[in-house]
Length: 203
Image (cartoon, rainbow, N blue to C red; front, side):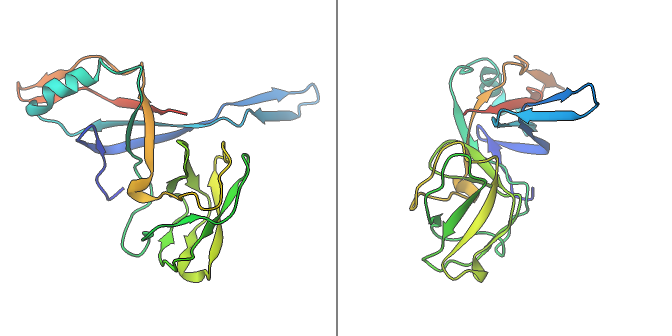
């Protein structure tokens, strides 16, 4: 994560934890076979600290106590390192309709954009869910369209012409976790720290 990302205007520090919460259920039969099932529901959960100073103390303190019942947004931090050689430029769209439950989407490159979106990049469509790519999208090797794999499977159908959002256009909608500590710690009378911030994706 070479690029800097921000939470409420404050720089996010590493280590940054991004977890996938997808409940699974195991059952062991009397013959010792394991059966596993999932409800196909998934959300991203983030935890991190921020770089803060005494000047931020009031806003930080309030952020631990207010607006827990409303969603906020921030740019989704990317796991893969961004550079001019692996960043998509211009407007990339969905090439064809894809139904809910699909594990891949066809991407339109009618504008002949170049660039590589690496496997493991967070992306979005027209709905609020954030996905991660399971394959690399190399537009330089494509004449018009390519298929890119995503996780989790689409929770909502997408249509041809819908935006395919990457990089800073991939915006996470989140709730603050109710497990966040409510308060602030002063160190040496100068620095202020609200501890670890935990966010859950708003679906």
